Image (cartoon, rainbow, N blue to C red; front, side, top):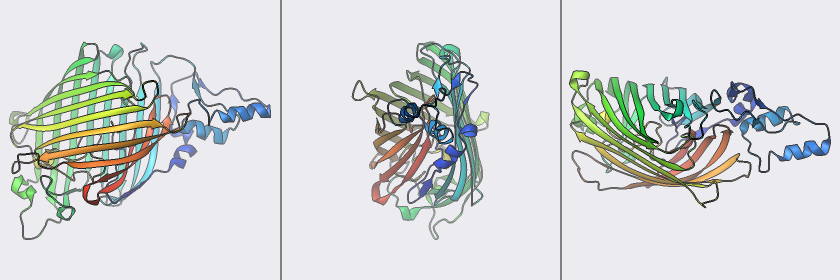
Length: 429
């Protein structure tokens, strides 16, 4: 999901869960669901004791149940009694306070909503994820991503909209750079990506879309003295526009993209940008996103997940700020263990494996371990000569059991001492 508060190397990200507990009635609700209810309270003390044990045994609970228990110690965990999917909205909203080297202190609201548009067994869950963040350096980030399925999965509408006024550290091109090469580039940015996929066969879709990237007020803040930067050599301009159609094919057997547990996902998108559509230059890219999820062991709910993400320049010269970068995917999740944009190049290949497992029988807590690898090339170094590994572990805390939304808190490591805390609302992939 959206980096719903992504922390970077040598940073700390603090998510105050007590805010969720104190505001369960306002922030994490099961909206438009008249059948959602608590079991009736009873007076017998031994029965109340058994009821409380539901919070620690096998019955599924989430943060909302914990909050309800704190306010009403006679209540059972919430249950969904209607069995009707269509029309329900499963909200999760998480306020947060963060500190990163790029932003200083920041306050953010991270939210998502999951819902179904059909009630048949094979219906996919739709989701909308959004973040609003403001930092002490007067930086603003407002990304919104949507993955909406119409009735009977006939159409899939994908949106990636964002506004950013956010200085970013750049280290130059390729993977032979060091942390000491980093300096700040400042810009304002609007992204409008919109794609409509249509079902051709069950779980197989073809799509047509439009992508716009508009950068303005682009400038280098503190570039190295007495030397031309890679940005200057590549082509530094105060404004850049990339505009073009997208053509895509998609195969998706997952039923819940917020928390995938089994199935396959494949998305191949070709993006040609044209000057007649407002683009500064003609250039083309190809994105190949492949994922697989399997239960391991077979009869458990533990999941072994695989992710391959290849971001390739097919033709032309994309603007510097449109080149593939670490954590440059829709949800800014690529490359845990490294700061965003730590690596940049003409082409990127990426692989990741994650193992997700339960820590409590009631589903409130889970854990993950992960390992990833990324490699870039540049116009000056056409071969993929370096592989940058990342690895780490994390915990999962159930925010909403009906949409299976987790708070993900990971600690990742990379090469040459890179490390940090990484947080998401929902699974990383």
